Image (cartoon, rainbow, N blue to C red; front, side, top):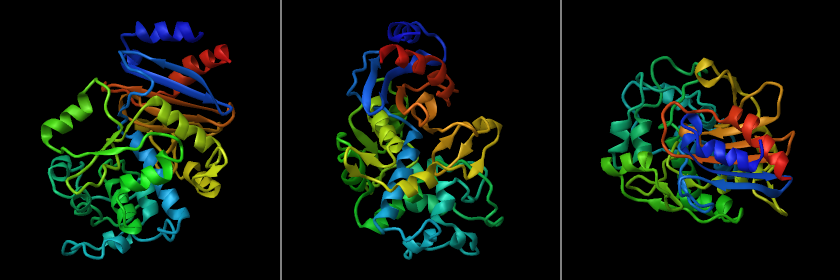
Length: 332
């Protein structure tokens, strides 16, 4: 399948690929693929859902490299000395940054408290109310989009600046990508539009009323943005002659720390990044609706894909390897 055939395949798709808006690929340091659908242009951005978590994994590493975080086993509560812990809650004192990054932090309740958190004045403090519980630290994987919000709060408390400013200064701008601006409206109607809209968005990041970004979702990027970030990961933290993040942290971030179950395709999980195969150097930051940063070290290629809201699309890895990579070989 060459580039033209791939374009038509997506254009005519009525299935899983029908919502794809952009694909951008970088191989051996050069852009080798750039295509768009549904009226999108290369520079358009959209909410990439949980790919946001992968970016937060990188920001945690940068904060660690710069000494704002002592180590990943530092306790979460070290950063919130003014938070009033609920009576009888003890587990919260044992939760570390590493637990957040590997999704092994424990939470009260069976489901995430979306309404309570997303209608609060401070998303971070609201989700802290659910951290911990009677079962203690079990090491069990618990996917918690709202829980990652605590990581944004930690970065802000540790650095003394807004997480979005820290990201702009230490990640987006050094990569030559546009600065993100906060998306300030947090009404119910606006949140619905943010998830469901099929139109391009600004280079923005959803924020709570305090101006703290949503760490588990809500970052708006283009496929090009994601491929550039993936290329930096491929380069061991380097972009040109600039080091953005230590190679040591990246190796730890991408290493398999926990094996996931059937719901997540039995993939391995690092620090908010997935390792789809046991025996291949392939890594991904994955979001709903097929948004993805795909990194393949063996082929030295990174791919970014954006897609509008579509239910039951999680993993684009197979699509990339069966359809996109062969098209790249035809363009080189």
